[in-house]
Image (cartoon, rainbow, N blue to C red; front, side, top):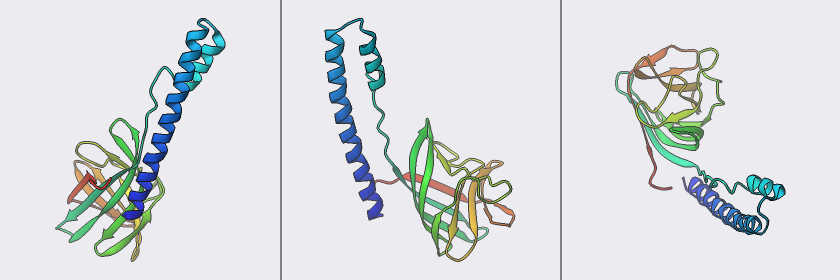
Length: 178
């Protein structure tokens, strides 16, 4: 958790540095624009520098997550690290936590688990449900890969080479420790 906080702080510092550099370049570009209006080379430079639009700063977002299925006695929780992908969707880049007291050892590659051809897209979404049909997949210390997803109006999980098990509750909220 501390490592992730340091990583987020480092990314934020890099973003601030980049924003400062872009601001200086925009100032120089505006100055050049004022000195030589109508010059096509100046207009091309302005376009390359992105003077027309702001720089979007994107940083990792940490989420606290949990899954509980009392019917199958599954409890899981941990932290997801995501990056902003598009309006309302976040690509999961790493995971920590436990699945029924077994340590989660890592996020599985996209489309690598579990039902053929591997549904997991490792995406978290705004609103409810928080997961789509692809869900996210991870491995645990004492067992195979697991895919947690939302399908047919319910959350579900699948353990590699096993059946889809429906039911339970999945919650993901942004961490206040960002």
